[in-house]
Figure 1 (cartoon, one colour):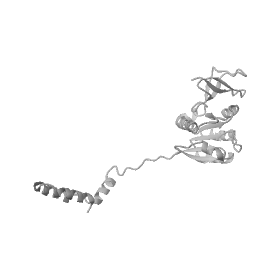
Figure 2: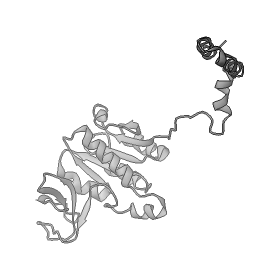
Figure 3: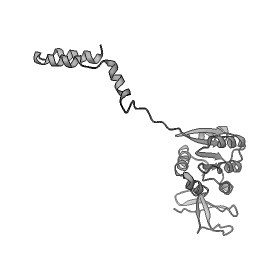
Figure 4: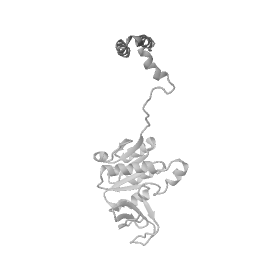
Amino acid sequence: MSSHRLEVQSCVRVLPNSLRLGAREMVSAMLPTRAYTEIPRLSPGGFQRPHTEPRAALVVAAAVADVDRFPAANFTRYPVHTTSEALRLIETARPRVVAIDWDAPEIDGVQVCGAVRKFPHSGLLVTMASPQHAPAALKAGCHAILLKPFAPNLVAGRIGRLSRELPTGSAGARAAQSLQCCGTNRVWPETSCPECNTPSATSFEFYSYRRMWYACLACDAVWLGPRQE
């Protein structure tokens, strides 16, 4: 006998005589215990199952000691430590975001960037210690640059932003060919290079509330200038 039925029967015993008969009939009509477990399964909605979606892939091309500097919340992280490993995994995993440590000695950043750009729905984040390498990374097609040292929450925010902002669909594939379709890169047509006076400088990283880093893709100059929004 189920515990529910025993509890109901104990309550029936304390009822007045005039109410006991009807209560006993209700107890006898109670469904068996197994029925209460079958009802949810047989109902139109069925059991509530947790909704799980496959996590997007995040390829981290960095030295072994630096992989943990790239947190992978909401992503499946695939660390690679050589150029050949990166090229192979980018081809097979089709990651949503690829993070490249430009300073890793065993990784050719330009070659890896070229492989990522073949897949327009993949975002490309580059980290580096010196801003002097920014023009090469921008020419290779990265969507965002993060200068070292950086906090883990900052790199996680950049990765999440690339994943959210990167366009999808055929129109998105065409837009993704632009450096400023997502991420932090932005071209400023009215800002000229102080070295060669070429217009359309590219800002790639914030330095402070008042200044930001710029790069000229014509002469590879890098400089700090006023922050623009």
